[in-house]
Each structure stands twice: as structure tokens, then as C-alpha cells.
Length: 266
Image (cartoon, rainbow, N blue to C red; front, side, top):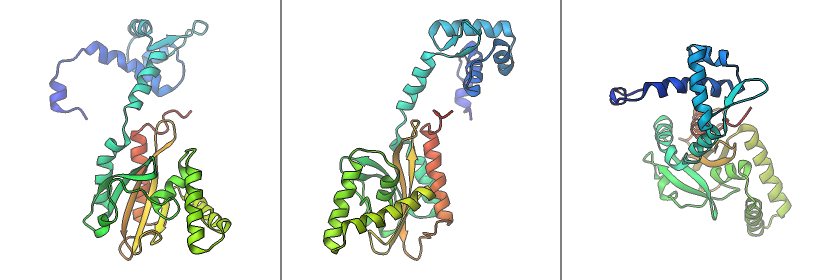
């Protein structure tokens, strides 16, 4: 939506017109003939050609010498990657977390992968006592928390398996359970999480607390964060098909889209 202030600013109309051609190329995702580009941009072929010549000079458009078709050039890729590199999931998560908290009336948080594992970096408090045990900087269990399970199921890191193995060994020792049994139990949980696209924990880390956590992906289709919601047992609906679960999935999808998820797919 163009604001009144933006609309009143004096710009260079020819640049805005020319970018209609780039928009056509970007949306078609394939090399195109001049006539088709011009038609898509709603301008005469001769006029479109002049713009394309200028774009080729700066490298934002290229032309195949054999077919005569035009496509986005190397500089367009540079610009796109530079823009994607500036997308900060922590910064962009703010409005998504605020909206989610307002929708489900539960405390929500954002976690990223830190030096010591799944780490909470941002919290929106719904006014529940849950913030007593959850603060920025909190590192969560990979096997027992919803957040940790989301990373265990979807995150790629050379250190992840070692951290999980160490955690399971500690659990096995403290509960006097065979390590293979602990590992098998966790794998069963992770398999369901991967099928659902959503992690869940019910009173397993903090007694009386349920939680969901959904993975967030960036333009390289790599998990970069997790959106988590937490609430008291009896008030927090932890059913897989609940409205809370659906809201979690949608919030994670919205943030992933903002980070360019899917933009590199064919």
C-alpha cells in the first residue's frame, strides 16, 4: 500500500516504468521474447527494447545471442541475494509474534540456534506466569521441550547430533534407562513432528506447561528459527488439530515467506 507521503514524493517515472519489464521477467521465471515482455508490461515493443538495452548495459538483464530471448542478469541475482542477506529473522519476527500472541492469548517466543543450542531470543508475554521460567537467553532441552524438538527434527548442524547424544546419555544415566531406549523414544517423537511440521511438548520440561514450536525457514530453505507458544495445562489446547496449532503453523509460514522461503525453488 502506497502511503500519502510516498505518493507525494517526486520520483523518476521512467525508472518506475522500466521496472515493469523486470517484474515481468521475474514473475515468468524463464527467458522471454521481446514481444512477450512488452505485452506483459503493457508497452510497445520498441519502447521496451530501449529499456532492455539500458538494463543490459548495467548487467541487470542479459540476452541470449542464439535465441534473442531476454532474462534477468547476474547483477539482478546480486541484488536479490544482497536483499535476502539483510533479512533478519529476529527483527522481522516482531509483528508476527505480536499478532500470534493476540490471536491465541498465550505467551509466544522466538528461538534461534546459538552456541549452546536452541536459545530463546525474543518473548511476547501474554501475562501468564510462564515468563518466570522463560527469558531471553534461555537454552532449551533438545529432547524434552517443544522448541528443542523443533530444532532436533528440522535443523541442520554438525553439532546437533552430538548435543542430542550427550543429553540422551544424561537422561539415560539419571533414569537408569538404556541409552538405546531413550534414543528410540526420541526418534519416535521426532518422526511424528516431521510428519506434522510442528513440535509439541506436554508437561515434559516444565510441569503444568504445554507448548508448540514451529520451524521457520529462510530463502535457502534452511531452518533459521523456531516460533514457540507456551501455556498452562488445562488452558493451552495442545491437540494437533487445535486452533492454536494451526495459528502456529501459519505464523511460521508468514515469517518464512518474509525471509524468502521458497524463492529459490523451481
